[in-house]
Amino acid sequence: DQQVKQNSPSLSVQEGRISILNCDYTNSMFDYFLWYKKYPAEGPTFLISISSIKDKNEDGRFTVFLNKSAKHLSLHIVPSQPGDSAVYFCAASALGDMRFGAGTRLTVKP
Amino acid sequence: DTGVSQDPRHKITKRGQNVTFRCDPISEHNRLYWYRQTLGQGPEFLTYFQNEAQLEKSRLLSDRFSAERPKGSFSTLEIQRTEQGDSAMYLCASSAPGQGAWETQYFGPGTRLLVL
View (cartoon, rainbow over the protein chains, first blue to last red):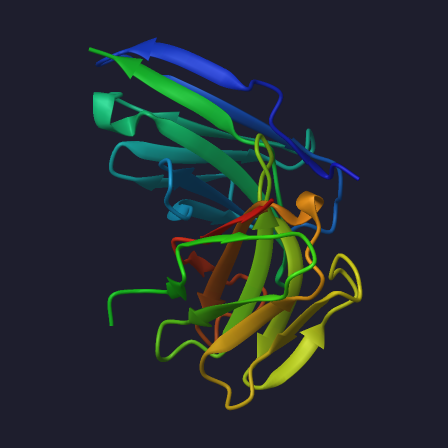
């Protein structure tokens, strides 16, 4: 059962522009949402999170937006840098039970 | 402590053999998780421990899979009678106490298993 979906397998943006990665979920019990970044041959690295009581969380160049009514979250990276090129996983958690999307491969071109 | 560590990083085995992977969590973390990741997919939850207690194991993939955390520190994941379909990346994660439902899990580098 795919409770967390990332419908775009890949995204390519120009350096300096905004990258927007999207994620949809189906389980209304999810109350904590996370984004992880993964380089090849490494484990996922925690990037940013948001709890269900908020609709926005910002950390430097990274901002996560949560729309609970639409069961949708997004990650904005501004400005995008070539080093941001990686696979980004969205995750949603209910009482520590965490489900992941299939990932979006972001390529930032110089 | 530099983070979650896993050993080995790579394992090649023949079908039918048993394999065991080790995970050392971040030292003050009391929860430890095992995931499997196959190509093109996100990590898939297998089991987790709070200290030495295994609180969820119904999502282990089959009875060939088992995990232990005998002293509440490191953990091992064993796969018996490996099959080619077990080839995947096995990830370990840990989280700190006191976060309640809003916990952040930190992942190790993974063990990549190839079953021939």
